Image (cartoon, rainbow, N blue to C red):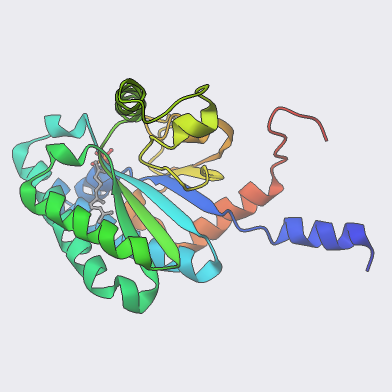
Length: 244
Ligand code: FPP
């Protein structure tokens, strides 16, 4: 086998290190079945569980999902309550099983806008995640990409005024103030549900992500669908602005 074959083979079997997914289509999935929208969110949360476990098993290091945006508070109160209850349930479960399953969970977003109970769960999840190695699922909750950047800029300005940082601000030093501090940018961004836009998700981090859009509604998204997205990702030529 030549060196090139080896490199080619490596390219063929490449698994994205970090996958980001916009969980979209729960409401339409429920409507098609004559169910309330909240049933779509419950089904979507189960799909998240399946896909997260699959990502862990195939060697993805990070999965970041968009579960609730800074704009989603405009939804009917009952729907917001259901989503928060689901997040509470899945965070509780994650906290109990993270160490056993080698799978950690973190919340990205403006946690201060969440209920005290969810804030406490997010804090506990962080404490466990700090000492557990392995696959990491990040749930974006009360999250907005622009909000994240403004939040980071404010924190940087505070540190500068307090003399905690000095020297030139670089992309690398700025990114330490983002919710995603310390983790690599997503390689692959997937949006199910038929829309083809970013909707204020990971604006900074997706600078060089490959995008994959599908009409499949999130609760119907399967491990086979994820394999398809990864196959498309592998066929892309990532040049990062350079030439090959
Ligand atoms: C978008 O679909 C989905 C949401 C705003 C909520 C996603 C939340 C969950 C799946 C529940 C908890 C998640 C985890 C990770 C445990 P939509 O309601 O906008 O669908 P539509 O476009 O069909 O109306």
